[in-house]
Image: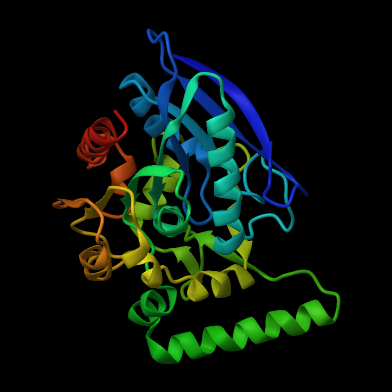
Length: 304
């Protein structure tokens, strides 16, 4: 296995995205390649174990950080916008096709959580995608928000979104919110991840705390997330699609993902890992192996 630092332009060419290309050893010709990216406010460093697993099983991997995160360019830092991220993902796919060691006709997508929604969207409109694995994917932001905080909570959020626009009008910087709830945070502190297993993954997980990871994100990113809805893409998905769910996921409702998959007309499959939680799928011994074994089988079958 060889690992190289890579960079490629964002979709509009205004900033540079960075990551790593993993090339398996022992192959004479071009190999199938999987483009992989992190979820909401996370870091590609935490997915190195995913890239290494796939590479050991014969797949090339392009693993990168979204704009505004990690070593990738972009401002404001910590802002996620799924529409922009999907367009950038198409550039990552283009980079993968251009790599001399990768087969341009055998490209798959692996996404998790927020980027799990991204790969489902791309599968609905980019015909270069030949296989998809979506792990605990984001499906419909408004529904997820209502289930998490109720209609009143969502209405409060919308007030915050309007306030962010007023701040922008006044020339102020975007407000910032906590990514992961810390033990010392006062009661009532809002954080995107407020579970013990989420904290354990972010702070004590296999990758530790990535050097360029920040425990904050822009408040207006929440509006982007609430607006992001991939339901309309289900019937348009053409490539074989595997969905992996965690049986104990308390962050993204599994029933929504199952209903989405029912509408997919392409070859499809569902794997549910009993007892696993949303973030434990990245942790060896807590669902990671089962998830990656399923992904490897899927890519082996459909990118062969």
